[in-house]
Image (tube, rainbow, N blue to C red; front, side):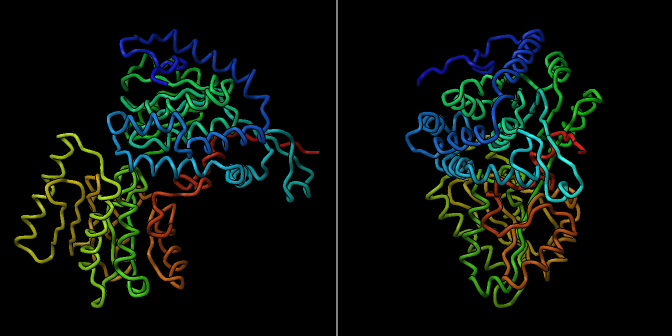
Amino acid sequence: MNHLPEYFLADLSPETLLQPGLITEACQTLKRNREQYLLPQSTDNLVRILANLGEQWCQPDFPFRQRVLQACPEKTGFSRATLERGIDFFFSRLTVANLKALMRQELGHEHRLDQWTASEIEQRQNRLALVRGPELLVHLTAGNLPSPAWMSLILGLLTRSAQFLKPASDTSYLPLMLAHSLYEIAPKLASCIEIAAWPGGTHDLENVLFSEADCVTVTGSDQTLKAVQARLQPKTRFLGYGHRVSFAFVTSKALAQDGTSCIAKAAADDIAAWDQHGCLSPHVIYVENNPANPAEAFAEQLANALANVEEREPRAVLSTEASAVIASRRSFYEIRAAFSPATLCWFSKNSTAWSVVFEADPLFQISCLNRFIYVKGVPQLSEALQAAEAVRHHTSTVGLAAVQSEVRTLAAEIARWGATRVCPLGQMQTPPLTWRHDGRPALGDLITWTDLET
């Protein structure tokens, strides 16, 4: 499998010049293929195919898995160990049970896309409902992580939508490998997907693509979302997933019950996953102050835990520019620590592999990523939320380390504050398949309902 067939536009040589007419033709072909191959599929059959795809990717000898792991980090930006962990987690969730649970959660019935169905309430009201997905679903992906692009394609297949995925520059490799693997298992379904890459802001290509789309999903900066939405026709549904950050909170009772070392290991897993890229990665870990278990001690244990993670799952080698950013920030805090006991630092030796900075100042700070984490002590959760007020409307996930009797009370406070997901620390990067991204129904946002009153 040295050379893949040119099934997708992204397979063409970089010298190939894409023209608006070619994009229009590709969209029309996708729609025809959808009509012929995708619409007649039953939900049960689609679920079985996707579950089979997930099972194949979890096999160590699956050719596409091997190809991806051998290509990293040159084409993926991640070390082999980091990418392997991400692949295992993502594809292990693609099971028949999980996919059907997603359909039931968001549509009320797993066969809503197949036939008229009714929930218990609908039955009492003499109503039935049928749902349908977009004819052509266009995805613009950021590319910092592969999982959002992979998930977008999975959701589009479940809604029986033709799909055109345009990744950010130089990030088409991983979604392209998923599409090729689907071609091996179900070529007719894969013919309803197109992947093509071009520099952002190429308006002549994007204009024809947007004119063909029924729904456009965009993952990226808030500025990117605003710019794309302004160019869409009123009839085109727009789903934007903008800039998000995450953080964690550790209670003193949790430290006393579970031990500082244990909780630090869980936090290190969240920091190391995908090298801290993506909206679920923690930037700051707030620790509830307690003389018996001070935040400084937690920061030191976290440094030890990150050192251990680096041994079994090394971070990818960074570009000169990315390494320079970390080195510059390290120097800033080293100088601050030399003059103030309110700042402490722990850094990996002879590399920028990981960095831990403790500060008494609780103000939320954006990490420079690549396993650079802040630890801050606070009297209680309300102080942490107040310190994170600047990112209140941009917070995705809060990882929580608390004893069982505290969890629901603290989670309710976090929810009212504005976070859309609360999970145990150590699971920030591993949401369930049924997770509501940004607090919205991932599958339900794509579909349109038709009610039948009998």
